[in-house]
Amino acid sequence: ADYQLGSYANFMHKEIWEQPESVRRTLLGRLDERFGTARLGGINLDARALRAIRRVKFFGCGSAYYAGQLGANLVEEWARLPADAEPASELRYRNPVVEEDTLYVAISQSGETADTLAAVQELKRKGGQVIGMVNTVGSAIARECGSGTFLHAGPEVSVASTKAYTNMGVCFAMLALALGRVRDLSVSDGARIVAGLDSLPSLIVEVLGAENEISAVAKEHSGAERMFFIGRTRGWPVAREGAQKLKEISYVHAEAYQAGELKHGPLALIEPAMPSVVIVPDDELLAKNIGTIEQIKARGGPVIAVTNADLPDGLADSVIQVPRSEPELDPILFTIPLQVFAYHLAHHLGRDIDKPRNLAKSVTVE
Ligand code: G6P
Image (tube, rainbow, N blue to C red; front, side):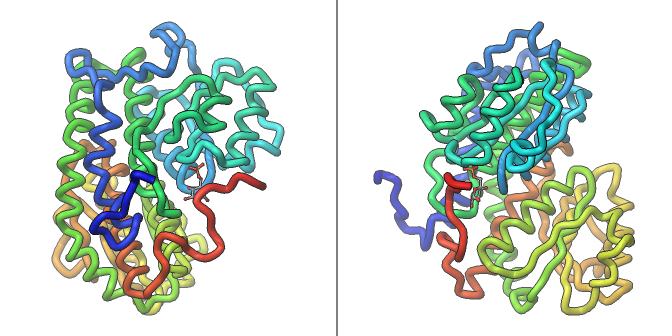
């Protein structure tokens, strides 16, 4: 009741703009600059227990599941532990192999999603070690997990998740950092990541400063009935969450695809009426992603590049420029302009942004 709209047109817009503050809040007191690590007090695992973990499995529904993919990538990159993400609705029913040295991470904004809760219960029944990454204190999933990390995003009202998603990414980064630092991640690499996390809020401010430019790009493409979101490795969870945001609030058919898979089917759909949003971080795969843009252009498909590189003039039809951060943190930062893009595209189409048709903020029944 004390969470008010204020001067914002709707909650999604307000929550997008709250992100510098909500990221700051979740980082507060959890970063250790000196030792280049993170301390997540709610996870009762000392260095030995952290070292005993051999695998990490993230699970949740919707955006929480997509965030989990981002988390799994970070765990693999920094801790060199096998990690993946799975929809909770699948995990609960497919009789998973549960191992005692796997860390299971339940992800939920509301803490009340029925499938996620049921997956936690099933894993616990089989002796799995489950922690929660939950936003709502006192929620069913937080209580069922017993230990974990609260996201501290504050209340989220818009059905389309924004600040909770971003804080999931930030909390997974801290978990991956802690897992990495009891293994082979060096103190200097840890310190570099800590500094990168610390500068995220100001980089988000920069992203939001480009709102008018992003809105113009969204308007230009608001006539499209369908869109691809293309990314590879670090860009893949970004593409998926970008497509998710667009489809849920604008009803434009948005589909995410891994860049390398385009040639195995989806290229057949490329034509002037099918724009592609291509995620292009300035990392070791830059040349590959430029090649992807060229493939799409050669078949007459319009391209919107989301990038922190200096792309050659005229390569993409539209460019959404993102500030540079530590490369591993790009997926967290790159998602934010896509929230803004989806928001403005839906706005141009006159959609009911906070309450999209057929969707609920939290799905507490199956
Ligand atoms: C619903 C919402 C999504 C959300 C998902 C999981 O489908 O519309 O925005 O990502 O539930 O919700 P949770 O509260 O568990 O994160």
